[in-house]
Image 1: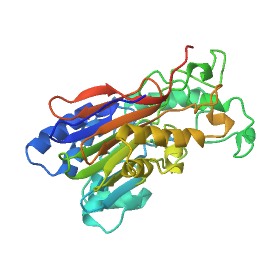
Image 2: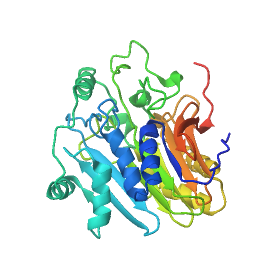
Image 3: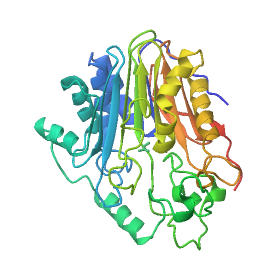
Image 4: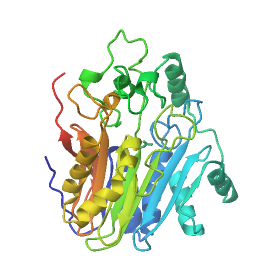
Length: 357
Ligand code: GLY
């Protein structure tokens, strides 16, 4: 299953489904002659500022202690340089903070208190990032005694794989694009007291990749609040160059949203760019890496009743010649794109067709 996608001559911006306002602003800034990486960071900042977006920036769902922890990473194709921050608390614009790491330091990744101290030194405002909506979601999660956290039960420890309740960890999403959705056959039953389908739960993230013009320069950026209710200090793919984002100015740029652990364990964005380098189209490269992830998902707790990954990942890619594409592990996901004219939402290709409930 593939989506034919070609650019029309100007810049190409590809983003996750929640990135429409981001690529709209980035396209406007680019048209005014703004710096390309600055333009995509400014676009992502719009989504980081959105209090209703539960997976990014201000209002993102917190860790298990009720503290919002943010990760972001970006790459500058022409310089082949990166900047990233992870486990950042009380600073909302982490994509911009990652940009400052790239611009002002010779480092690639700052984490935790060191990243926060760097932000304070640069004058980034400190604030409580919990909104009333995300605070209530966290309280509901605590009240639900949900097992959907980062801990494994005694019979789920790596290598044993004999649990039958772990599959409910990623269930309960009501948002088809939140990258938490699992096939309905694995959703918890109404009598399952350990789960609360109405508690929002997400791996959602924003990714944007930019090609300035066919044959031009490439840039990429990803920002997230990560897995909701995670163990404090957990970092997923979004803050790690090569996993949540990777850009090679000779070939293309790629990014990922969804279950960060799986993307990390397959060097997802790097693998997509490598697949494009070896001649695959962006959509083929996305599907090929999703298949690699699916083939290596072996623990029972991560599989549905048909042996497919019981979680979603969506990946995005743009190639140096302007071809772009996106694919999801499961059917029904979307991505945002700007390739001349209006920005729009398109359907992502997918690896696994959804089956009737
Ligand atoms: N993809 C975001 C995360 O897993 O943290």
